[in-house]
Every structure is written in structure tokens, then in C-alpha cells.
Amino acid sequence: MARRDLSRTVIEGGRRNFNKFKRRASHGIGRARAREWLDDVRVDRDVAEARVLRDRPDVGRDFYDKLAVIRSWMRAQCGRAWDDVFSELMTRFDPRTIAGQHIVFDHMLRDVRRAGDVSGWDGTRFEVGDDGILRWMGTLRDRHKKPKPPTWTEGRSAIKQAGRWWWVGDRLVGPCARVALCRYHHLFRGGVPHHYTRATRLVLMTPTEVGRLMSLPARIRDVVLWRADVVEPEDAVLALPP
Image 1 (tube, rainbow, N blue to C red):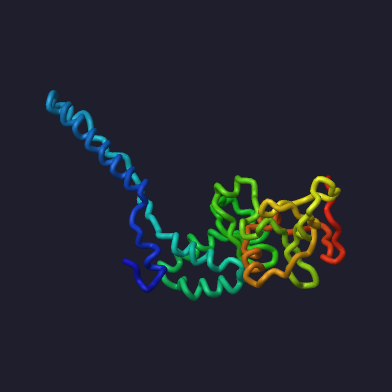
Image 2 (cartoon, rainbow, N blue to C red):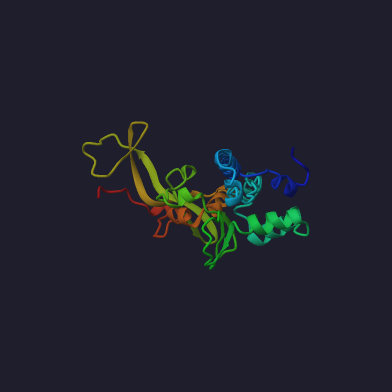
């Protein structure tokens, strides 16, 4: 049952499933050893004096913490300054308590990798960039995949100019009625061929879009950022075939 104190709720998950399996296997081995020893004693009672019953394999305790809730909270903070998130974290999960210390220092802070951190721990889920912003790194499986732009970018790139964020991409100019005779390259929208211009500054990004961009892992954000020259719509020329 959940409690008002989130740090208490998180550490009340009991044993890990695999730890339960190992404990059951250990007890099974212990029972098998006891049966084997009793069978031998039943045949020759001197065995009881000559051989000691072996103990079952020792299995330590491995507790399961309900970490999904705190990691969801951390993901919701991505895009914010880490200093602000850290301040709120220390307030929400009181490190003066045993439960708070366990959650903050053994899990939440361990999941965050700071810029320049060379720790060998590969289980980090969040990172703090050089700009001090907290970002989600993705799962371990995601990190081995080739980074792709998120679907919400709609194939556009992002660039910051004069302190403002812009979308950059192919700008449709208009439908083309003479495709076979036209020397320009075309994009098809709804089955209709259109002229377009490349690397054109399209529209200002909304604050929500900027926040989502800043929350992306560095390897994915690098795919979205445009690092070449851009042109204004009025200066753009129609794209020619490569």
C-alpha cells in the first residue's frame, strides 16, 4: 500500500524475484542433502559420527526497491537546471532519514552522470551536460542503437540564431504542373509534386518544443541540431537534382 512519504513507498518492495528464486533453490539443495545424509545413516549409523550434514548454500538478501516511481519523477524533471532539480530532490526525499539516504544516495544520485564524470558505473540513466541541464540518456538497449531524430521533429532540424530557436528543413514552395519538363527536384505531398528549398529557416520553435529538445540525450540531440548554414525563405532557391 502506498504511503504519503514517497521515500518509504519506494523501499517497501520486498525481495527481488531472482533473489526469491535463489532462496527457494538453496532450500531445495538443503533438503536434498538432508535426505541423502539420512539415507546413508539409515544404512550405516556410524555415518552420523563420521560425516557432518552439509549446510545449504548461503544466499544473501537482495531487496527490490520500487524505483519506477522515482525514475518517472526524475524523467519529468528533464530539461530543467540540475541545481534546481537537486534542491527539490533533497527537499522531497529527506536525506536525514535512513529511507531518504537510501533512495537519494544509493539510487537517484547514482543514476545521474555529471559532465566529466569518469565513473565506471554503466547504469546511469540521466546526465547533466556542460550547460547544467538534466537529460534522459535512454535505456542501455537504446544506447547501442543508431540515434534517430524523434518523430515529433517531423524530419526537421533545429538551430539557434540570435538567441532564438528555429526549425530548419525543406520548405515547400508550391505544386508543379509540369513535372516531366521541370528541371527542379520535387517532393511529393499527398501524391502531388512540389518544388522545395533546402536548409531553409522555417518557423520559430515553441517553448514546449525547445524544452523537449533540451531534454533529449546528447547523442540524439546532436542528430536534431543543424550545424551548417541556413538561408532565409526570401533568399532560398529551388532545389536542383543532386
